[in-house]
Image (tube, rainbow, N blue to C red):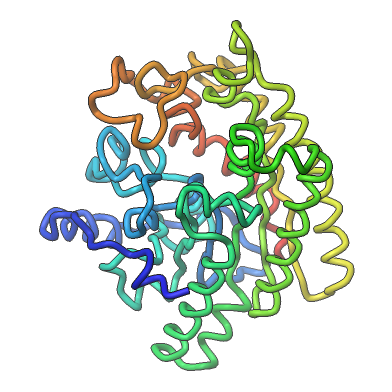
Length: 366
């Protein structure tokens, strides 16, 4: 696929305002939050996935799944709506900071990206994507296959800029994060009629696992060794799924949660088999399901007041283009909310989750 002829659109950002934000972001110095084994340094963080870790790739492709407008980004550095599906930073940013790479992980399709930015990592993630190849087609976003093609292009760029030896080190020693799959269950399977007539939940999660396995195999074949795979969250407890599948009381949708748990059990087993079959692999299963569920079930223990609605608008259904600065009643203090919109957590939630889910597992990558 030719991304630049078929999917990329001209950026509408003000160049002067954007440049000022870039200067703030990339001149910010920081230290690693976690101690790496043997004082090793991670050269780069490279991310694949969906809207949870998309820092703005969707800004530059032909899709309506965007959020490069207020109130998104209102708590980001410079209060700039970068295309991150949150009020501030997202997990890929926090993980990059945690391992001492940089505190903002840019989108690979950012037209202002420089080679220096590439050498310390990027995100290829695209909001609305999934393991099921049909999921990204429905909303015209980058599939995992597309993201892998961009990664191949990335390798060529860093090889040309830094030489084969350094590029090989970056590819083999970097940490890779894969965060995807929620849209398969919530949107493609439960919200549209395209898969359910042909797949029950066990069969559909098998389809997802087969895609995940193929993706990990190809990523390994391209040189990746340290790969963290984030499992599916308790999808049924996000506000939008409560609204559409939780009944009159907006309880958690058990159908969605059951599908997520089934997929997660298969994913964990698949990763164990992958590591045994390929001794050089360090694929780490990162469990967010029960960690996020704990926040949702015990919000006050973590300093939250609202767990079943998002901050934006009514908090029940607004997401992406439905969450705008004109949405009614967007909250004043997002730190009191677990969710920013009806699908995506707030920056504060991510700041709690990343240390619990990622930092505690860091040694498994070595």
